[in-house]
Image (cartoon, rainbow, N blue to C red; front, side, top):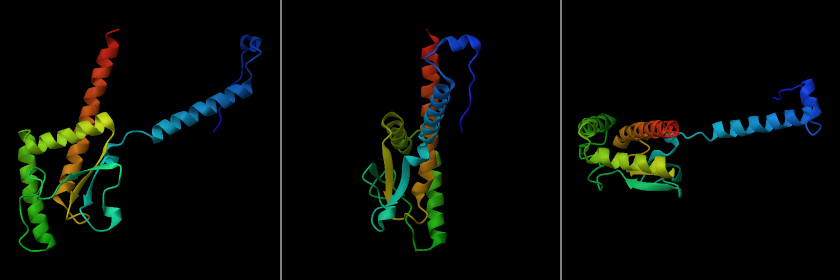
Length: 171
């Protein structure tokens, strides 16, 4: 999509500028803006739940930092154990973990601190994270953690942007 520019009479005195160059320059600028929009930071692309083992499509990639999210991690692991292998039981232990998560987040406990650390790494270094669990790709308690981290990232970015604006306004 090209925009046409016409030169005013007073602009024609600049012999080194012609309307074709302006059209070309504008289309280059439009492409740069489009590329920037395509590269916009989306925190959902920086954290996901993966499987400890299994199909490669459900495992971490080489550019992701792996965080253990199963019971071997006393902070992020779900302490509620399934009594039987059924979706009803899975839903029960995830609901129990949700209560634990909400309580921890409210008091900024160890889960909150861990997730906040992940969020800070995402904001500061654009590091991608994979939280590994045995459940994934089936419903997993870590599925509750992902939107929390995304929200934390968004809050940190908003805070960072406010601080940048305040800093710029001092001059």
